[in-house]
Each structure stands twice: as structure tokens, then as C-alpha cells.
Length: 203
Image (cartoon, rainbow, N blue to C red):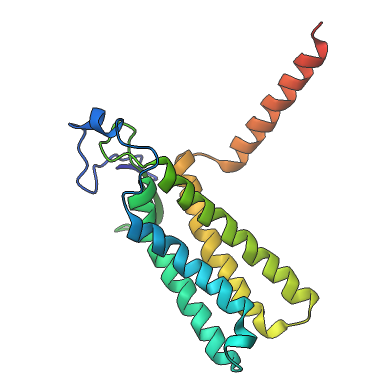
């Protein structure tokens, strides 16, 4: 694993070595090497959404539903942050405090030459679950406000905060820990505008 932090230090993690890198490229792209991690990557977050949608059917107690959802969201946050991201796509992030009391965000990504190359199937499952569920929680926030169900507001905001935190952390791992996401988006839009302008000036 390559570590990207404020000191730009590199460190091998998770016992990776590059001796068998050519072997990894020959693995089946559709293979799911970590079915248990893939299952729990989706289980906790989809369960939290289902309990929220069916809470009035499952239980008449708001407290029971709220506690169940919070527990599922907490388990999902820990699982995605510490297990499924590392195993399924070779990414990991966390926050650490140095001896001077300074807080540093650390973003890791497994080098492309590693023998532990993620498969296409695992990557698709990971990113699909990571992106879709936070969007649903944002929708739940607006639906809670528009339906005046303010007692659920704290629950849906927690869902947004926990799941968007993981999404943001893994996007930073993917594009590079020191990459400015706003600058990246601006550069992309600028390049697209330039291409369109050049195309209009063509014959």
C-alpha cells in the first residue's frame, strides 16, 4: 500500500509484495475473491435503508427503529472504512494525531504493480454501494423535511454524515490524497469546454 499524508511518506502495508505481479493480471476479471466482504459491504447499508423505509411496519416503537438504524449505520461505517475498502479495491483512509497534537488525514492506495489486484466485479460492487446509498440518504433528508417528520431528521442526517464520509475518503484515496477535488473538477470542465470550442472552429 502507498501512504499519502501531509508528509508524503510511502510505506508498504498489508504484507503486499510485487514478486507475483504478472500473476495478478491473469486473474479472472469477473472473479469475486472476497465474497464475505462484498456481502457485508452491502448488507449493513441496505439493511439500514430498509429498516428506515419499513420502520412503521416492523415496529411501532420509534426508539427501537432509531437505535436499530444507528447500529446498522455504525457497523456499515466501520466495515466499509476498515475492511471492504482494503480487501475489495485496495484503498484505506484514516485520521491520526502526531506527537505535536496535529491531526493528519492519511489516504492509502495499493500500487498497480501489487500482486493483489482488485477484480472488476469487486470494484463495481464496492463503488456502486458506496455511491448509491449516500444519495438515497440525501433524498431521505429532503423527504423528511417536506413531510414534516422532524423526529427522523437526526437519523437521516447521521446516515448522510457517516456514508458521505466514507465516500469522500475513498474518492480521495482513488484520486490521490493531496489532490484538490475542486481543482480536479475545474480542470475537467475546462478541458471539456476547450474541446468543444476547438470542435466548433473545425471545418
